[in-house]
Length: 417
Image (cartoon, rainbow, N blue to C red; front, side, top):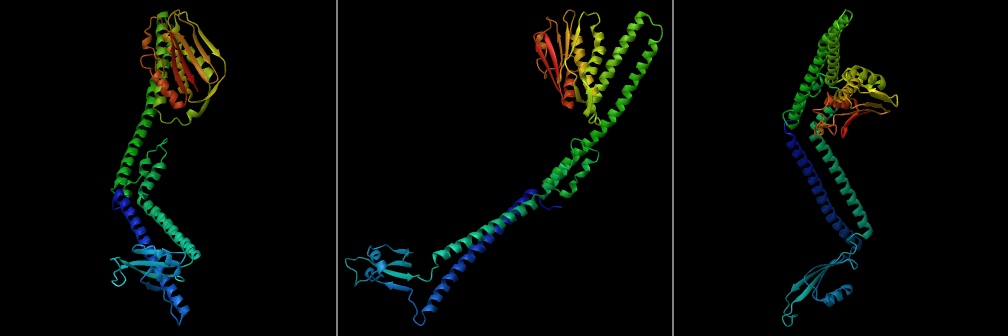
């Protein structure tokens, strides 16, 4: 349980990290200053101890430039301004002062005095400076690495609830949701902060989706039984009627009822295919294309009654594809039915071409049909044919590709796999 919001925890973590690094750097600089002071004093004391009993005079004062040490005399005669000067090669540090000496001054000119500090033996050698630079670089790098590690640890603890929630969501199989998936996200453990609100929302959403999955399964199982039972009863009754003596008019009526029953059965199968979330591996079944195409032609041939239209079937290959056979049968039945239904007398033939990776159904439409109402691509299915929108959805579910092409008065439906 977290007492503060995510925003406040991140701010606190950042403040703690910055404060810790600031204290560490402050202590490091303070230690460096004290070490430098101690080092200078130790070197000066060491030099005095080595010169005992005559103590060295490291700091001396000079009233005029000509009295300076020989290595500084020429520089002093250039009348330098007030300030501090360092001469690394000669190992001197010089302070230039302005003094008023009435005895020495002429024409109110201001005289300079020099304070010379001889640092020979006190300052470290260049090689030692390099070692100290290497040591300081190592300390700085170590502090930087420790600061980075501390920042990672602190920030990781601050955003730990977000990581935990993301892991919980990642463990859920969104393609196969179960009834209890919403229980995997325990929003109560995140408190009342932003992460807790997000976890609660995800939990409620998954709960609604799980309930929807249950309703979908109940509906499809009930609809599958309740809708197919009347169809089976009607089919049995038709078979009994066919065995009795019927007049020519009655035979036509029975044929019409049989066709309507077959259409109803196909429609039920089609909607059940779309309604099911899962079909227990039926989408991975291997089947032949040719038998389903031949059956669709036989079932829809009654639409060509009274029309002198030929159906030309070109079987260029014997493809075997992977998918849902009932869904493929529904798709083929719709395409064949569209071609048979929209082809008028004298507009044949209807061509059905089976290739290795596609099925083509082509037919002519009436020249007086308003071509502006004919679809020119797969996105304009409404108003043309029977169930082409449903065909598109079935193809998407099975990984197939469907397109409709219009060239003048010739319409070609293409189904690829």
